[in-house]
Length: 391
Image (cartoon, rainbow, N blue to C red; front, side, top):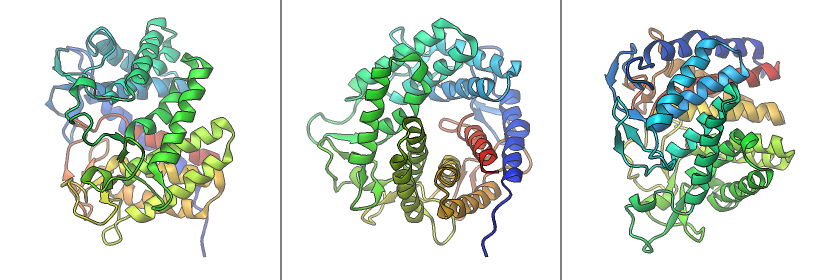
């Protein structure tokens, strides 16, 4: 007989982990008091093992602490932390035209050109959220101008740094419309309603009418420029974590637009995706899969990653909260058990990021080139808030 979980206890667990374990880890170890910005390459115990600074990780940490300051509590140390990172980004993160570099040296000298559109998206999120926290008009202007740059680059995000030969096999990928679904709501207060509405509708079309394939019941990562499927490495790849994360973005848009059919479709896609992506032998969600069952080009295809599981937890508990789906609730409980038992570090703060297929820790780092102060604390915050509503 199924029993309803103790939502109050689960909410308190997420809240305590966020406020008393994860956030103190980053506040203690990540702030570079000498050069500004944050260290993100942190060993298990928080010691720094590399001092390069990656723009999207810098921006994500700014956003995270500004968001918590705005939505949880006006803690001065949170606002100070967010401003600390934002000022480093404001001075060094872009080329003067709001083209945001990928990485910098510790003291802010550019290392990698602005080829990565996600440096832009997270800079927009960061400065938009911090402008709300501070009322600083310059921060709001940075967010708006960066958002304009994103829209202008949508058809060719990498610009002159695109390594593909133009015209041979033109493709578009799922990641940008996916993130814009979330970004549109993040910057809603700073852009005109017509631009917001247009951006949301375009993203919904891309996600649900182009990348979602009803014949598969799945979202593909790449399609041809005309929206057709491609029988190539890139065209066959399925990233279950991306798909599942996108579905809670779609649910949020469904709430915002008062369109319950969007929520229902997101839940349907999410349930199909997690069943497809779940490792039936060892548990956890695969990182990449080939939709035709061919060998993957990504050697890390069978690893279990922190963000995939945390984002999936958000999706499933949000799906349950909005629709009452018992299937979503069962998957949330299954994901919770796997994620908390495998990724949480019982000896030091924060969570591990990379497990092998069997669920053993593959890398002991707490932050690096791709993992920073974002998915774990955002996921804990989201789950805490949703679980409170389920009580």
